[in-house]
Length: 270
Image (spheres, rainbow, N blue to C red):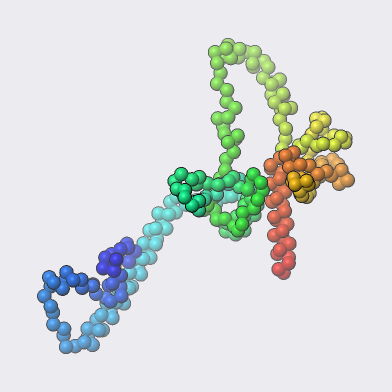
């Protein structure tokens, strides 16, 4: 290592960078005839010192050129992080369980959703399945965008059969009625089934429109959320179990809660 050009950045051997001459190995001593040292040692020392300074200046220039080349190569595939709050992402796994091969383990964990942008290309995450926060910020280099499999364009694509092709005219005549039925059967994300029997704000007797989630706590070892219903006063707020609350509403509540904690922490420091 000390007598070979081991890196492309300096283009010098480590031994030459220290002593300003190449190392004399045993093979050089055997094959090369011994030389007599000159009487002027001061002249030799000055020349040795000037060679060291010159070699280090050249090595510094070579290192800067190599850094620029490496940076240009890295920037070809580099992309600026464009994640936002509430975006779902996958996180790269840096550790492998003992006894397992990294090639056979999952390289991505999640999905998670972003609750806070802590700095330049760093984010705080919560797990989508149970809303558990990840300790510490995560750099964007360890994240990639999560795409829900239900949103794939290949889903809900029906391949027409011969019988269906023959009935195209009947299907076109009933297309408008089918669209109306699909719209009425789709449940919006902000509508939640409520267990009480108060006055409804929509036509469905089992659904209410949610304005926002106010609080959360465990009741009988089960997570419940306090709901502010759209069109109702705060006296009509109710605690609903977790399975009745859409995932997007729970994520929005956690994001608002984390932002409130961050604002209070800043005020306390001031």
